[in-house]
Image 1: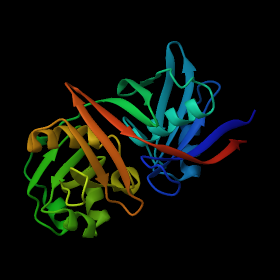
Image 2: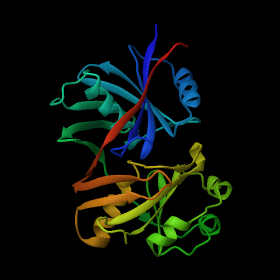
Image 3: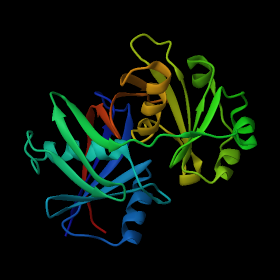
Length: 263
């Protein structure tokens, strides 16, 4: 039986920008090894696997090398597909049961808004590998549940970084987020995210990273709503809003491919 699979560009309103994610609609659960093989075949930063269950959907995310605990852009992409294909009506909430608990998504106009857990960082001494790999001196280094957060001097420094990914891979975490206040008009902060430890040298747009970046910049800037830009080569825009221990991530998505899995 053929299985429907899609490729969706997330956190963008135009094709070939944002972060591409695979979305695999399963009629029933499949084994982890098979899902890992499909994710390797898709060769995207994440592929989402979803099937219906009572009161919502089971949702899992795989990079080409590992399963991950939290992924924003593939959840945004999944929500987009559920509404686009009519699995959910436009007014219905998407409810996902995941390794990070219950996550939800809703449509607000043309935007999709995800309800995710906040994952704040705590300050740590900068590991020598980070300083060596980035080639710059951090203003601040913190460690969250998944990633290091590194504040750098400026947006220009962020954009010009050419990290040593082999060194970053030795850190033993999912990734390293670099961030600074934005100088590009209309944005509050910018970031880039490097994840060689999970097989992704640079993630184009990382929704889950903003679950940490949001609380960090809330303390720095004294507000709870932001427009953020992830300054990868593809680039992407994330609207961030904090409410208690939850972070709301808003963005757009565009379907670029529809197909069938035959294996």
